[in-house]
Amino acid sequence: MKVYHGSHTKIEKIDLSQCRAFRDFGRGFYVTKYLHHAESWATNMGRRYKEQGIVSEFEYNENDFTRSICKIKKFDDYNEEWLDFVVLNRDETKSHPAHDYDIAEGPVADDKVQNRIDLYLDEKISKADFLEALKYHEQTHQICFCTLNSLQTLDYAHKTPRRSITDISEPLVEALVLDRNIDDIEAADLFYKSKTFARLSDETTKFYEKPWQEIYEMLKHELHQSKIKI
Image 1 (cartoon, rainbow, N blue to C red):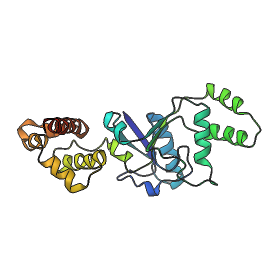
Image 2: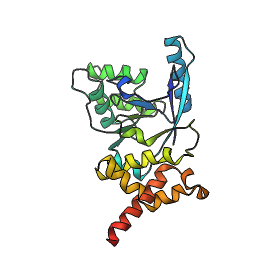
Image 3: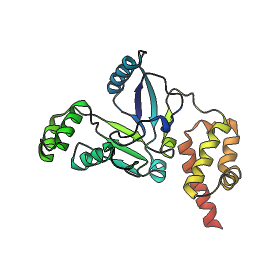
Image 4: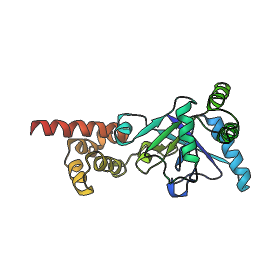
């Protein structure tokens, strides 16, 4: 899925420590699937910093690998659970992070919604009235990448395809470390002795031009088959 991040500057490296806390889904790097929303946010941020707003484009890899390494929370629409989750994350009196998800996805509490949240917290409207009003709200979307682990599922869309075996080897070894709970040395040993690496080393096959997530699935299958034979 193509996703977008609007800011006053080009995102060269994602640094979660620089992300603000107490947002809808907590501290994290936020993107949206709606380009016009990212463009609007970039414009607003540009005005704030007196710079030209910039939209950075990414590819969010929604696949089995992502689901295997990340704990994900997804809200399909504004609902009671979403409201409770946003209120929890925005509560500055509570310890944070307020949840243990790697990735959280769902609607946005924009200015209009936030105003109604304030009314709800001040007990000026009921939860039922709050949710009823949101049935007619513009459709919004955001994904928050909350942990370093989650950033493995996000690629810069402006990057040129990986054509170096060294470049593609790094995320494969890192994935083995996380998936198998082993150290870097053991993971590298498994990878560099595999048939998958041998195929990568043969540049005539152009196997290394495949997405690293696809190659990782092949590597996992190979290691699983080797274990069975033993």
